[in-house]
Structure formats: C-alpha cells, structure tokens
Image (cartoon, rainbow, N blue to C red; front, side, top):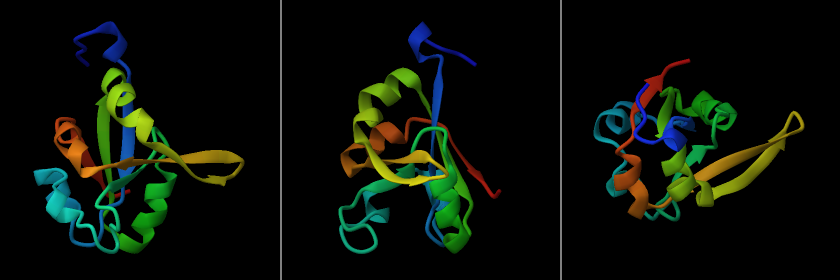
Length: 121
C-alpha cells in the first residue's frame, strides 16, 4: 500500500448497493450525474452510500437489487476533507448507530478518482 503522506495511509471504505442493471456500469464508468437524476428514486440526484467500514445498509439494499456491493476505497485525508461532512445518521441496528454518506453530484469527479470493486457477497 502506497501513501503520499503519513496521514493518508489509512483507508476508509464506503459501500453502495447499485440498482438493478447498474453494478457493472458504476464499476467501469464511475458515478455520473445521468445515473442519478433528480427524480425518484434519486429525488435529490445524490448517491447514497453505507458509511465507513459498515456495509450492513448496502447489504440490505442488495437483497432487493441483487447487483452486489460496490466498495470505494478512499484515503483518510481525502475522506475527512470531502466525505466526512456528508455523513448522516441512517438508523440504529444491534445497538450500533449506522451512518450513510450522501454524495452530491458535484463531488462525483472526486469520488471517481478512488478505486472501486464490486463484490457479489
């Protein structure tokens, strides 16, 4: 694992359950505004992720979508700068607060700089 700066050697992973038919497209092309229009189900055009290092929300959505879970690996410094302020409380399960990260379209170009992998588990 390479790191440009000591504080960016930590990796934060966020998780997305792509909608039916979108898994491979998001994996190959990244996140594009056209894939998240400002109408249902993406009322605000944002992309919703399960928060850092807790894929449980994405796994729940994947039970319906069945596309797998897309993992985006972001260095800690970038996550703290761009994505941490976008964390919201989703709910609580098994006495743990679950966090979602709501990424607006204007941050898609930054989000697309980070490696993605689609896991079917």
